[in-house]
Length: 125
Image (cartoon, rainbow, N blue to C red; front, top):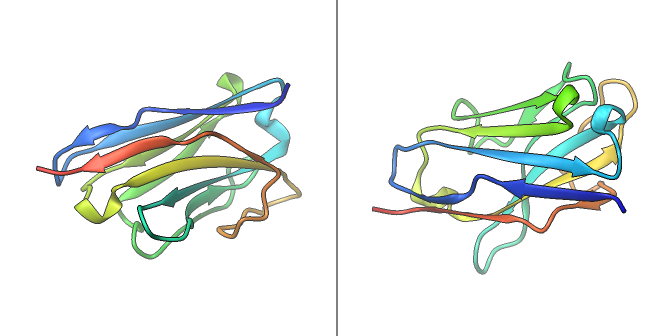
């Protein structure tokens, strides 16, 4: 069974940091581009960051550029999202998603095949 499992969410104060992990089971991430998305209460889900299958391409939403960093360790079958300088408006459920990747492709729109269940990130003092 193909699964993506997010972890690393929690409560953090403004200005703090968290690192989210997206671990795959049942398949190898080597062939997949990965996207991170988030959905805040009352808002639509939005793309946050993505990385191509070999990590040569990364993209970020303007609201997180310079604060978030996406990376992948294919040997561990895991993708990470390092989030620094967190703001209250970053509060959301964060999801990772996988799509069979071609070349340097990745996308911040929802053109992904497999989705995790999400992990809650709350930024509050």
